[in-house]
Image (cartoon, rainbow over all chains, first blue to last red; front, side, top):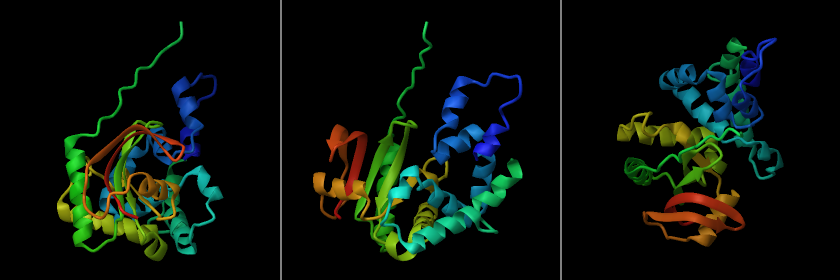
Length: 98
Length: 136
């Protein structure tokens, strides 16, 4: 998602300070907004319930999850599928935009 | 002169409060166990999230739980603009927030509307919350 945002930074151009500051967050909902991809994803979520469930699953992630020793194997596998699943994973869709 | 940005706090509307209650009731009817339910304000992004504590995260995983919640929303006919799945966070019963809420504001299994504002929950500052249920 940060790769999609980075495309907005142009050579010989001083980017808007708010955009730069927001870029450093790990919050996926905020990154989606500044990427400019939110309207398109919202449309896809309406049409694809698996993507809807998967994206919401992904939004439950935070950088502090790395310290979560209580996560189950099922949750980890479902998170992985929501990110990289061939049919309704978020990553295959994102790759079309960077 | 330093530039200042005034951010107006996103309100928790009566419609959001009623829809949250309807969703919890619908999940009860569907026999989806939700021992903990509340609206929680996230000051970092100026947004409200409907927090649902779910023991089923450990058994059917997040995709299964969010699928149940999505079907409940569809049954209620709630528009995505009013309450989308992305406004909801399902938390495991061993999540610190679920455990601390149950210890701080235990309610029993009914459906309540308890406002919890500018208070401290186990060392964490809660800016604003509305608790429907805390019965873990």
